[in-house]
Length: 165
Image (cartoon, rainbow, N blue to C red; front, side, top):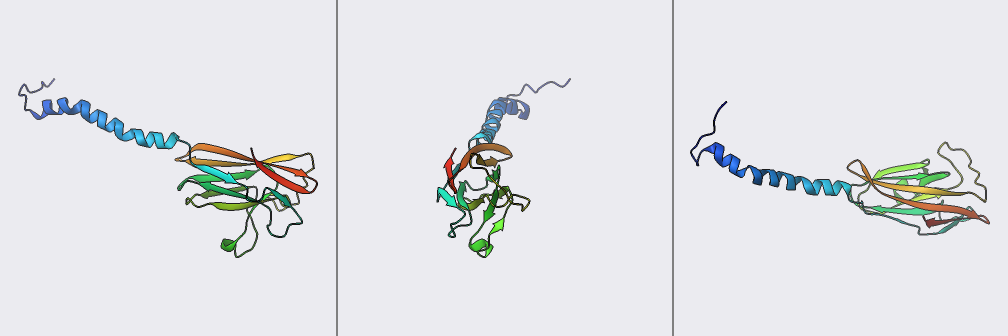
């Protein structure tokens, strides 16, 4: 077994004297990364029009606006019905997204429309008056789910009403 040099200025002893400080610096460098992965991602869901009827022609469904911080993976899933995109980015055409929408946030708000007319397979959905359903919005950062919000949708006298859940 090799012995350490007894000379106080030897490279081996200098390294050993600095080792605790090096280990501490390495540990501190990892702390912000670990904390960033576990802190909740900023996620907001707003309902610009809280009620929707199939007779309304100003929107193709109940609008749900999602705002998440830049870089977050966002997924919105409807228990029933269809999520749709509509606006300038679709050439003003209504584009069915099925029951799930997934996107990487750029930090800008995105609006999707929930419609009772179509399901993810393009078939007609009939939602009884007594039924209530939910749209679940999940934000993920670095592969970890950090925030989940719900929108509750109910039907009453031909109107679909949404509220945060």
